Amino acid sequence: MGPVSPSFVYSFALALVLASCLDRAAVDAKVAPREVSGCNVFQGSWVYNSSHRPPYDSTTCPFIEAEFDCRKNGRQDQLYLGYKWKPSACELPSFSGEDFVRRMRGKKILFVGDSLSLNQWQSLTCMLHASLPRSNYTLARTGDVSTFDVHDYGVSVVLSRNAFLVDVVKEKIGRVLKLDSIVNGDAWKGYDMLVFNTWHWWLHTGRKQAWDYIQQGETIRKDMDRLVAFKEGLTTWSKWVDSNIDPTTTTVIFQGISPTHYSGKEWNESGTTTCDGQTEPVSGSEYPAGPPPPAAVVSEVLGKMATEVTLLDITKLSQLRKDGHPSAFGFEGWRGNDCSHWCLAGVPDTWNQLLYTILVNRVDQISSGATKWYPTAGSRTFPMFLLCAFTTFHVVLF
Image (cartoon, rainbow, N blue to C red; front, side, top):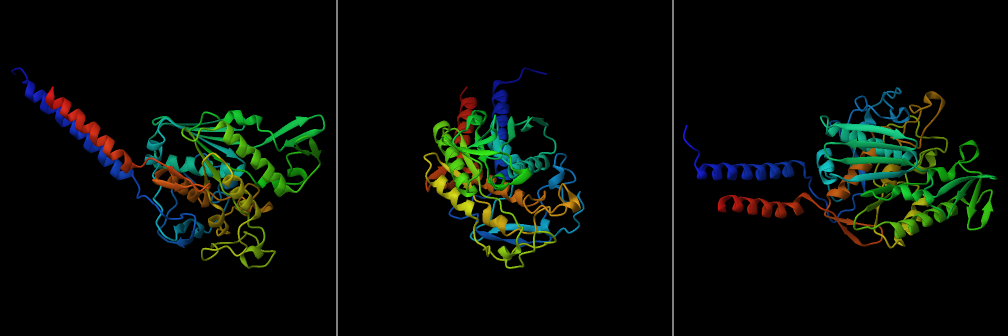
């Protein structure tokens, strides 16, 4: 066999470059969802589709907490799995775990909050696990921090359990909820995305109450109006974000208030009715009782912040899902009635679909009324074209 000619080598190299470029373009076309712009994705209704399937099967997700695994705990009805969130003016992009981790390659996401943050974090890890069945992942827990790593993409999805965001400190008089202190916030630095949540634990009393005293400035009380305390604590959090987070390197998201369904009066049924036995959402796009009081506090505090914060406004769409709770199929089984948390698979999967929409949508309307830009597959097309063209030209020329 004679020597290989230089022209053959150049042609072969050129073919490899073009094939690589075309393959990358094909991947982008496959995983890039249709963008949503000029549409309030949090306003809409739940639509039943018998062919709709959740993004994962709870029986094949190996790390769902027992309290969320309603099917394993004996829930027989399947209707709640067939409802899909439909915004009034657009379609949501379908969740793509492959696209999600490609956009977040080499980045770290931190969920900070109570068990509703756990609900959302576990939903997202199950969605990624189902979307990337051959990816190398690990799940580890150290104290109150759980970490789900997708090693092939260098993506970390972390949960830090923190019910109040502000500090609870053990002192001689007992456990003190300090409304103006966030020493624990040092652990939140260095992440590319922060997703915060707090509210439910502010209401607990008796044995479930996680503090003995509340401190505001130099004043220490046995108790105070919980909504006022919540606002003070959330304001302290907002000041911490404004002082410690650079919005050009870290995206900050606040998970809206997740509702409970312990009183049927809220959806025009009897006051003794709860989520127990509910199999259908509230029809339409409005919740009869209107938004819960803490939702207004969240909007007010976020609206005064200097830092751009995206409100993941899950409140109304979740209010409509009186059927989505574990009820008697939670951690305590028939002894309890959990109308606070959510079955998995279930409503939190839609929260994460909306979180994904924030990532893929070119323009996101944030709570302060400003505009934040996010990279999209389309915005990467021209740079990729230039790179391919330059490389091809270099091969041909030299």
